[in-house]
Image 1 (cartoon, helix red, strand yellow):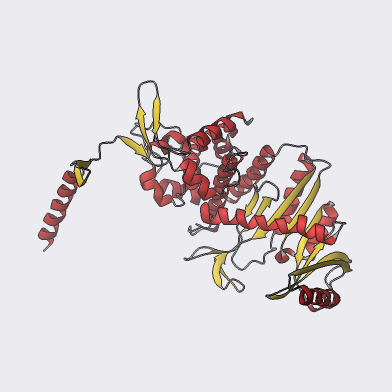
Image 2 (cartoon, helix red, strand yellow):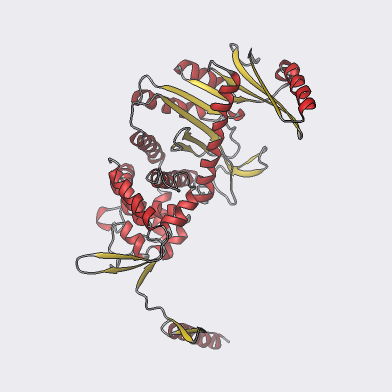
Length: 459
């Protein structure tokens, strides 16, 4: 039986080897034979990663990251240095390959090799899955801290001063876990075992400012004060005299955050969880909205503001209240703020734009697969989260280069589909590396425009 299996396997391998070198015929087209083979040379479906390489060269992102990561390996034994592995990993994530397993075939892809500074025809391939896995698992707490500092430095580099206003949007998100990962714990609100990342974005430009992995049972506001202290210090140093505003939802409505903002003299608009005392203060306003709705049968929105002190607060604070009456029913929302001004204008023109952060989180999780945190070690997963966040920075830079075009507000998956996932034949000669993209590629002008804009941005 074993002999029979061996013969069958050998025959199958021989058959597959022969098949790979044969021509394949398909149904004819208008009297002409359709013939296919596997002799097209070095081909790629990711020629657009050259744009990512250009962004990296312009701003030295992977070079900076590699310089702050420790490397305990013997120098004479190193085949893939930190910079090369970071290039391979970050570009792959931006291209849509979220897992280290993808390195099994990407390490030989000619376009990815070019992007990682290797000749496409070279026999030296990029790092394998086990090598990349070791990179992630040797991350230390010091590495994580340095990477987090580098993220805010990168933010400041892309947002030169002076600036009149800086808006900090902060939120948490769920990241379901499916194995024995360290600190994967059950969260009652989400009803699942998970991690609970804390994410911070610039509220105007959408650039990430911080990405902190936390145990699954953490409260939404856990660790927020420490992160804000670090960010506020950097922002004040870089933008002296600017107005800084913090926006967040009701998960961050805790006295410590209010007090920190007041101590640091920055403004805040934070959603406030509805309670009976707040409802009692807005009963008359809700009744007015209901009466107007009965008369017009059109949605009614009324606003007011008042000073309120919860039992856990040491002082009174201003609360903006919104009451709505519509065909679906009534709704009341409350926001605690330090800002003066008209209640409705503050709510409609400032606070509601915090919702755009949900789009940034969606891009990071769905399009950049930042929830692919499947390592066992918690620190390795924090390292992964930061890698995906830095990969998002490449996408952000690409989108910035397209301002004034039809892709100025495109989401990450659209940018990837139209500008990164490009088929090409790559030819290496003695003097050049040719990347022959399809003559029928429909976004040639946008691709060229993006490259020109990337090169014009000072590094």
